[in-house]
Each structure stands twice: as C-alpha cells, then as structure tokens.
Length: 243
Image (tube, rainbow, N blue to C red; front, side, top):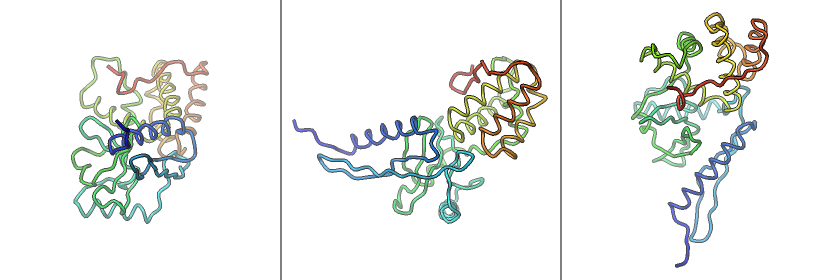
C-alpha cells in the first residue's frame, strides 16, 4: 500500500522537529518555533518562526502584539495577571507557556509550549480550565530558596508555593542556566546560609540582574565570600524528582 502524509503524521513530524529545536537551540539568542504549514500526499512544508530573546532569555514581544493578545483575553473574560503572551498556566497537571497569539487562526489563536517542549495551538478559553502561575513574591521565593525538599515536616501549602516557584523558574529560564542556579541554591542550604541570603538572591534575580546568568554570578560571589567552596557539586531537586 502506497504511503501518504496525513494530519496525524504531519503533527507527529512537527512535534518531533520542535522538540529537537527546543533542546539543541536553547542557548541561542533566538527562539525557533514550528508555526503551522501545509502538506499534500507526498510533501510537507512547515513554517519556521524565529524570534529574538531579550537579556533575561524571554522572547521580545512588541507593545502592539501584547495589546492584541491582552484584548482578546479581556473579550472572553479570561483574567490574566500581566500580559497574556509569556504567561504560564497549569492545566490538568501539565504546564503551558503562552508563546504567541495570531489573528490568522480565529479558532485557535494561541501558541502554547508544553513542559516537554511540544508546541500546541488552542483557543484563549482553553486557559480557563486551569490556573495561572505568576512571578513569585519575595516571601514565596524565600520559602523555595530555603526549603529542605527531603524533610517530612513540610506544610502542604508551602510545598505548593515552592512547586509554583519551581515551575515559574523552569519555564522562564534556559535549562542550563537554571540548573547552575539550582545547584548553587543547594550549596547555600548545605552550608546553612540560605536563610541569610535568600532575600538578596530574590533582589538579584528579579530586581537588579535582569537575567539568571548575572544573578547566578552575583550569588556565587556571595557564596565564595562566605565559604571556601568554589564549585557547586550538588543538584537542586525539581518537581519530577523531589519526594
């Protein structure tokens, strides 16, 4: 039987290519996204969208684009803290980042990135099925920074807060940069100085540095001044590995 392309195979091809792009181009100054395409029985054409990243690693979005997307959310009654584009949502135990909005797809205007890097299209009201994960407050970040993930005496409410902070960090920063930052957080806890410097770490990351690389370097200087250790050796436990 002669093989032919269909919607199912094209979707699988698109998702596989997107996963490769997300994994191997994560350290680029650009974000590469498969955004639609077309196919016939013997050929597939996929559209590659390339967008610039800012100093903090997030995609640069114009004020006009933000206005169009935010207005669409308002029209359907979706409450969003901040802008719709680049917001993070948890829906049925899955995390989604809103990476784009287009008026060319009236039924499915949103482009969402799942936690595994897969890109999907959805209507705006799809987000109403879950809850938005917003930038952590200083109090929430301090809980995350100082929490002993191996302890059995963690309040369920505090664990939920830390889970949200972890999700926000993983969704907003490149994997490699995030892992280095998490390892350094572990060292602060191992040396018993996490409580002393947690608020300063928050200020570096969210108010002064502007990106996780600079925040990491600033925090590393503090660590070196407090201890004789120079190289992070432990690994921060993420949601998927924490007990």
